[in-house]
Image 1 (cartoon, one colour):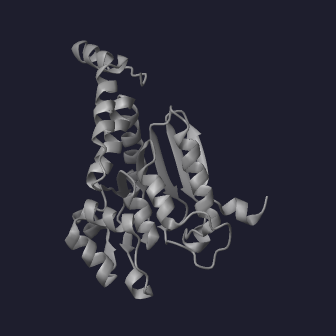
Image 2 (tube, rainbow, N blue to C red; image 1 turned 45 degrees about the vertical axis):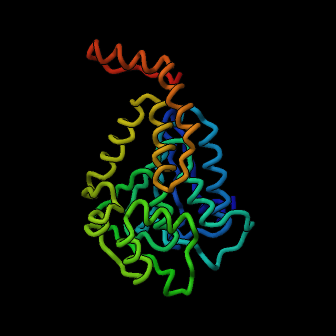
Length: 252
C-alpha cells in the first residue's frame, strides 16, 4: 500500500450509518484532485446503499479541512465544487463533525451537509478574495441560502476568521458542543435520524435543499408526497403512535 493510499479519505458503512473520514492530518486535511476523486467514489457507493440513512463526514487531526491542496497531483476529474455539490445532493442525511480549522473550500464542504456539529476549538475563514479567486456558483448560493446575505458578504469579502461562537450565531454551526460530549451528540442525532421513516426523511431532506437554492421540482415533490402517503411506513407510523411504541419502518 502506498503512502497516498493510506492518506486517502476513508469510507466505512455499518447498517444505516456511513462515515467518510478525511485522513491527511499532516496537511491539515487539505484535499488534492486524487482525494476529490476518492470522495466522489465514496459518495457514489453510499448513494447505491438504500439502507444507509445517515452519512457522517469526519476528519483526523486538528483540522476538519483546509480546502484544496494546490500542490496536489492526480486525475483532475472532479473539482471542489463537484464534490460539495455531490455531498449536498447525497441521498442520506449528512452530518459534518467539525474540529479545529475549517478553511477555504472546506467551509463549503461542511456547509453542504445538513447538520454541522462543532466544538469550541472550531474556527473558519474563507480566503478566496485574498487569493484573487472568484468562488463558484453553488458555493455562493449555499452561503447565502444557509447563512444569509450579510454573513456571506462578511465571510467572502473580508476573509475574516471567526470563532465557534460566531459560527453558531450566524447559523454555520447547527450545534456547538463541548469536546467531551461531541461524539455522543453526533451518535444520538444519527440514531434519532435512523429511527425516522426513510421515505419521508430522505424525501424532505432532498426537497428542502432544493427549495433553499430555488430549484424545486414541483412534480417530483408531489410524486414523493404521494409515494409516502401510500406507503406501509405511514400506516406503521400511525399504528405505533396509537399504541405508544417505537415504529418499525421499512422504507416501503
